[in-house]
Image (cartoon, rainbow over the protein chains, first blue to last red):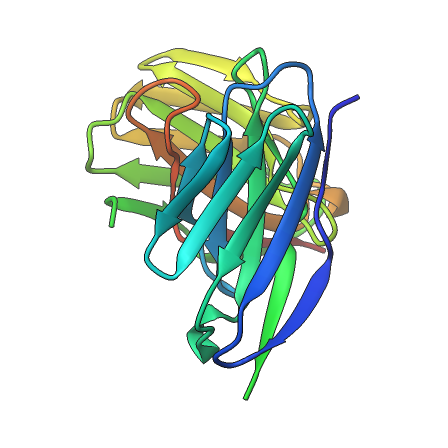
Length: 109
Length: 113
């Protein structure tokens, strides 16, 4: 079956760095997305990786290793507004988007 | 932000009644999707559309039907609502087929008593 694993919840301190991991087992691979979702709101797009390596976008970076079925989202200089759920999603060989259950990130002052 | 609205935003209904949720976009995107989101689960695809009158089933389509008579509108109907369909429903759009970025509407919180 197809499976995406993320930690359920993480806690970090304002100003620090946090890494949210995502491992996947899918039938084929055609790209990996990260979305941010604040409580009670819609998911919003953060990043897309299809090739191995690190993609940097301001305070957020996303890494992909296709051979390991692994990605992470790195958040630097954490701010209180970064408290949210972070969703990992993989496009499989049928171009269907498979979603992880999300990681709830709690930022403490 | 992509122009996507959903209506109603909140609805409480009773078991056995039909319910229709509406998604409206102003982006002229070809692809539209309906998802449900439940605690402990990832977003799950109910149905999607790849053009006017062109729709297909997703992972959890039982008990749901959809229609798309215009590019901008995608309707989701629960034919006879059950308590297991209590959920938050999100509509999403994308300009081209997967793996294109999907943009989400604000969601509809549906409670079936």
